[in-house]
Amino acid sequence: MTAPSTPVDFLPIALMFIVAGGFVVTTLWVTHLLGPKRKSKIKTDTFECGIESQGNARIPFSIKYFLVAILFVLFDVEVIFMYPWAVNFKQLGLTGFVEMLTFVAFLLVGFYYILKKGALKWE
Image (cartoon, rainbow, N blue to C red; front, side, top):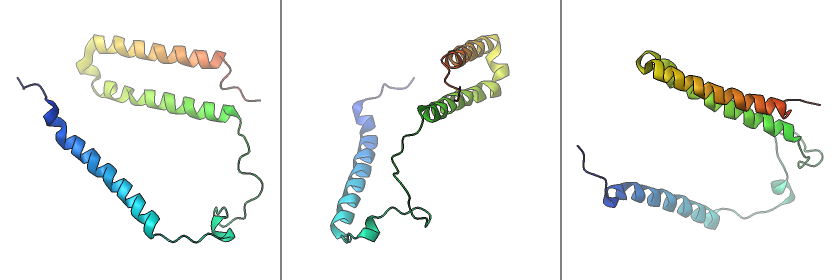
């Protein structure tokens, strides 16, 4: 049996975060001090693939676009949780199978909900 962890055991991790954060802050500060400060119309102009920008970049997108993107990520991540189950299918037995059926049932309830709300209907 292992001894319980003490706060001193986490000191290397805390030091790593402090050093990493200090490196980031120091790098940003030094580049701000030493970097060139030339501002001109050409430098502040929007550049994207060499094509002249046209119109306003802040045109609002339909919320449906973002909703579909979030739902894709949500269900994609849920499918990732199924891989370990599929690999260990035989070792988990009936209990693992019932738990996965419960998990899939929750996914289907969520999917049914978003269908009823019309989240995937486009005008």
